[in-house]
Length: 133
Image (cartoon, rainbow, N blue to C red; front, side):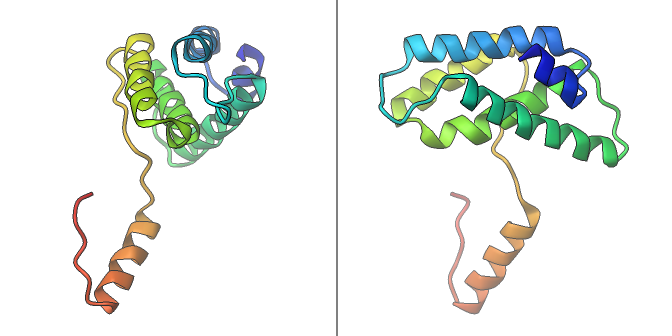
């Protein structure tokens, strides 16, 4: 994990890799044994690839990247790849693990402004009212 993070451009790769490997190990041990759960290298590599893309996008935007920003990117990418696959109970446990391993890092949903705008336009065209959920 450390080598992949370094190759993606993360400056705090050693610390992030240690936390990510711990997260995936704890998840394998503490979450329910579902057939579709993957806590192996393939799943870790997928999360790291997404994190690398997000890091490049942020850098293109000219934002300053510090250790906290790198942790936020990692947490967002792991959430994007793992949360949709978890059961409701495991989702709560996984979020708790994230909070323990990445204290102070907000666990937010991914946002896509273009998609949200398209949904709003489609709903308006169909005379539907959108709710916050």
